[in-house]
Amino acid sequence: MSLTESQQTQQPPMPHHEEGDIYFGAIFKFVIYLAIFVAIVQVFTFYVMRSIDNRMVANQEIRYPLLAEQGERLPPAPRLQTLPKEELAALREAWRRDLEGYSWVDKSAGTVRMPIELAMRRVLERGLPARAAESSPATPAPATLRPPDATKPAGAPAGR
Image (cartoon, rainbow, N blue to C red; front, side, top):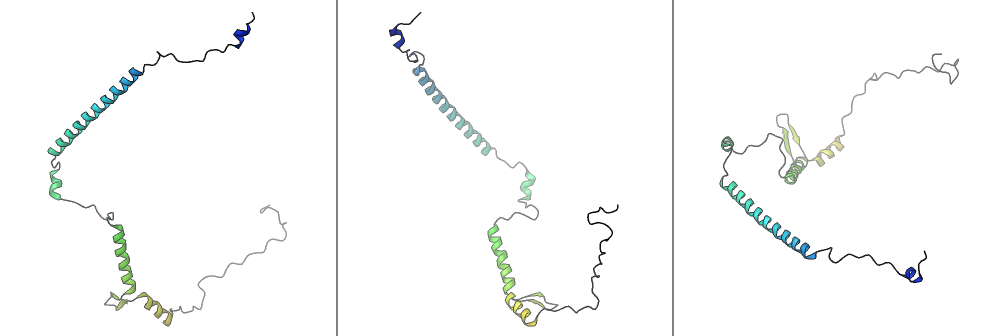
């Protein structure tokens, strides 16, 4: 069976949807009703949460009366720093005062603290104390090594 020339040149129809397949009115109504429902649920939730908050504030009482009697208790040391920058600055200032100022370390022994620059200058002027030389060395002499056995070849295993 052969096709005629007019049937061979004819293009197949383009695919398309039918106009009655999609109901835009129903989709639009669904979206509108859904938005209204969500808004109603949000308003309802807002009022429920507000009433719960009001009840909690009205019924708030001290649950542990012993805690109210004791007052605020601090945890045992060491505690976390509340103002670390200020505490570090105060610590460095105290160190600077110790390094640059005069103070008593032990008044009964006559030990004083002096500025570090002055202390370093005095050490350079007087020099560091030296140890007295000892007559016998404190460390023993190193052990002598035996020369390798000349009868064995260089690559021979030990013990055979």
